[in-house]
Image (cartoon, rainbow, N blue to C red):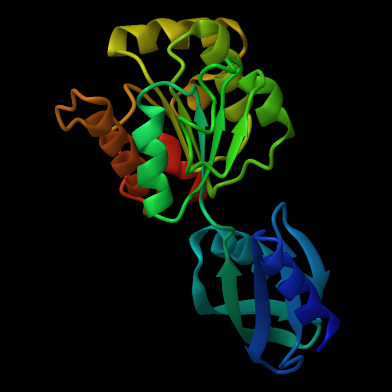
Length: 256
């Protein structure tokens, strides 16, 4: 097994995103490969620096969309125009749902997310709420201030964050961290009026209108939900919609 394939295997075993690109047609370098990691780090080369640069952009996109397709590139070389076909295959990490706030809605939301094969992490600074008795299906329960935990986490376009604390001292520091990273979905509980007031406070704390536009608030699709279970269903449906590009806000633009 070549070193590139070993690194691809290791990345997949660690459940981290990666893409592999291979030249399948061209004047030269057929069979050359390059691995592209999140953040556009690379290993290997396709034998042409200009081609590498073009492919890296498309491979970075493919990581988060799980795409596999052949792309055609026209490159100006020393002998004139050269055309290459490059097969790019992206391998996104498994989807993760981070639930901030271990209240009543978080319990059925965890169940729905696990049914849809999400990794679920529940964060709450209140130890009485974040317990195994309440969240037997969560992959991880973290009793800490959410913003401090999120600062350390690998947040990426395969990550969804549902902020369910309904308390400014928790949700505003959390949103400041999350909105500075490229996550696939950010939702915050609260009425439209509550959201507008929160957004104004976030602006005063330095967030831009573009960052704030990524917040889904009120969180969840409008299905007339009243019970915690129905609210959890509405939230999970919105998360899935965002993941598949069927989004009602600008949040999905992280992945475009």
